[in-house]
View 1 (cartoon, rainbow, N blue to C red):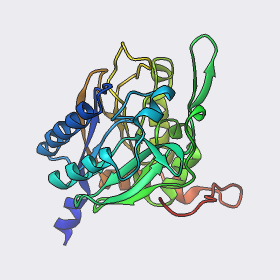
View 2: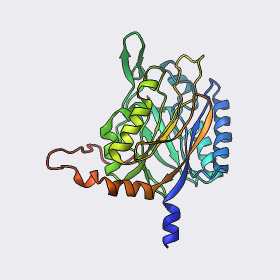
View 3: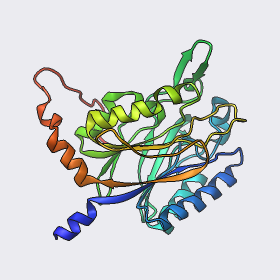
View 4: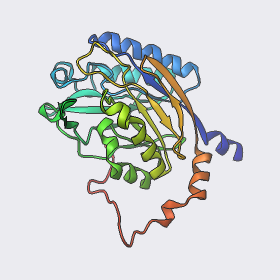
Length: 286
């Protein structure tokens, strides 16, 4: 029994930094190939980037939007089943009830969808002289927290801008998550400034692993992603990091190491719930 427990305390995570094109079929074909490659390297959980099946931008969301289940999620289901792994399907533009969402579907090794996360915080920013972007011009926000269980640990899901909100990560941690995943597409302004910083902050604050998956950089795109998909450990150390190009990065997630960190610096038991607390209004996962 101890041997089984020890084996389950470690698993391999793969982060696919996909070169996204305007051809949906090509994007889906690349997903099949790269996830199969990751499985061949022993990966048991694979993370795809935000908007992996379409260019990122408000002008593209309605054109590429699909229902879930639909074409792209059918491919994800098949890929998860064929490779017998957990597949966090980055995100796609989703049409649901006449509205558009930025949505992440997660599939288990049997090919069944186990959770769908609709991006909670929409990316509406205006940095004078650098970037203005308003997701709310076309997208609606999701209203639920999203977690899923694996034989290894519980995982919390956010999408890109969700990572800036420390309360969400704290709620996931308090719900028992030991890994937080954020498919994201930070740009050439916010990427170098905050991409790694935010991941390390979320990891240290909550003593969890944090993984992010960006599209590969395309200098010719209307929205240029920063790239640099990353995995950070509970001590705040970067343990895997991509450059700007299409690639797969791997990280061996060690849950015993996480437990040791939490024992050494026991912030969870030292919180002053008599003075402050972060609570979830919308309970449940979806």
